[in-house]
Length: 541
Ligand SMILES: [Zn+2]
Image (cartoon, rainbow, N blue to C red; front, side):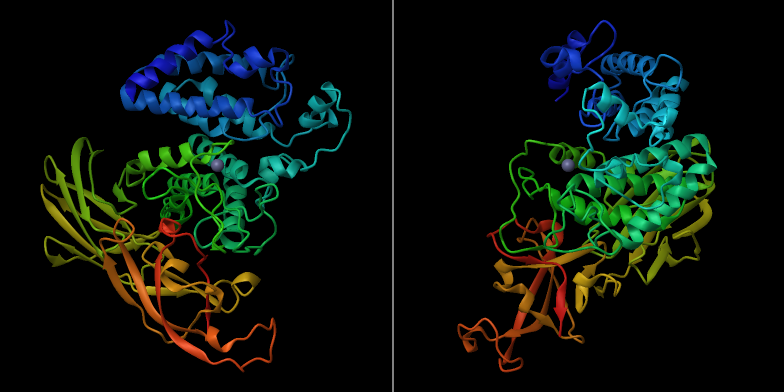
């Protein structure tokens, strides 16, 4: 892989213009159109992803060449855009470069990089001289005042970001903007960003997010619609949007130290994002509905191929989400078998985690500082977990709870073992009465995993299945199924097909119901066997 990337970086360096510009389409295919349509052409968006790639490659290999190429490109961008006289007061129609520039700043510590991120974020939605930049550039292209089909809110550009309180427009664009705002708030401690971020978070996760962590309910415009508009079969939920939500949740967690943000990160990565890739890693969903008639399947690739590489880089970078440190000690945000070396209080602490999570409730952590030291280990108590027990070296341990974390404050010495048990009963969840699509229905969740039923296990017409309210679930691990999953088994009822004639309607209650066994599998694993219907929200009889 390194050879492959090195060869591409060689080519990038050769392709870069003398002025630092680097986008081969506008260098060779339409050379006169550089920076003439920021609203639609994704020029700065592509630069943003290249910057992220350069930072990641530098962090993985220590090689600087790609970083240097991108720093030259960023110098060119900084010379082109800004509020100073002679510069364009533009910004990208698809956010991405904002968060990328903050990442670049983490590596370079060049204040110019942070200043450019700040400019792009705060210039958004402004009307210098009374005219919006996207209207100015459209006029310069000779398009006059022709109205754009989407409206400015599609690009989160209808008002300055500090005034935005509801998530509007294209969902991936919105997520990347909020990530950039959060990263900037973390860097600059700008309090004027915190309030809009909290409002936007409340709006998204309190009214506009699916139980899978998917966001953006409408196909038309791949966008947010109105509060509680969460249809299941026609849900859009682009894979990139769930990934964007996970990135944003991590940022909000860092900004506040509050564990409930990481609950959303966990919900998005285990469900809405992970469904975006098949179990063999070769096929991808762009769209992640919560109900299917059997006609929605993963594909090899897409003409607009943002989702496949996005899920690939999320999975490849997951280890970076598990732990973090602060002045007080170690945070354990996610549970997964991992080994890490962290710097705490002037020494290296080895952390080892062994678990079968999310299938099993037990997590074992070993903490090994070089020499005994006092610090806190903060274990996230997931929002879905009602009962958590903690032992240290085999004995029940006293913990305090702070911001969604169980805190163990003590002197740690080499090999100290923490046993954490997160009780994982099957939960039936219902949605707010305001979500019309889910009324009279329940979704099944165990631990962080949302479940669904598929036709291959349960026959068709899944909407006719009705769970009894008191029905208990049997939890069974199936090592040979879908790469090894825990399934939920229960009894439900459905109308007897044989007792139905050919009519479309008939008087209710004339058809007997029969008992049937049902099997639910994790949502992320759906569409990996025979094609057929799928349903997350089950009717409750
Ligand atoms: Zn995508």
